[in-house]
Length: 113
Image (tube, rainbow, N blue to C red):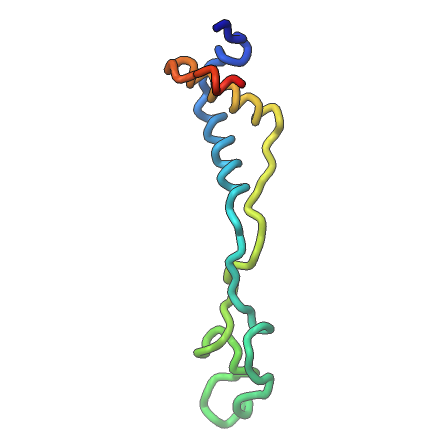
């Protein structure tokens, strides 16, 4: 079987393969983790005790992060973990992977179709 040299004979660059693998894994992440902020926690908005004269710290609500059952500050929110990778780098990563498989002798006719 005759293989095309510009696809199956590319010098192997680990940095390009690493970038492509990290890009694929980042796209695969769900990113659905979430915690509740102070506006999402159930509880009253009433001031728990008066501002002065108790000897305690000033608080406006019991939904703050320092109280049990309160919010989580700076916690995770749903987001996409994906980042962009240039098409030329993606193609080069595939060529490098095919070249590495060819060098190992692990390319079969089923892989090429």
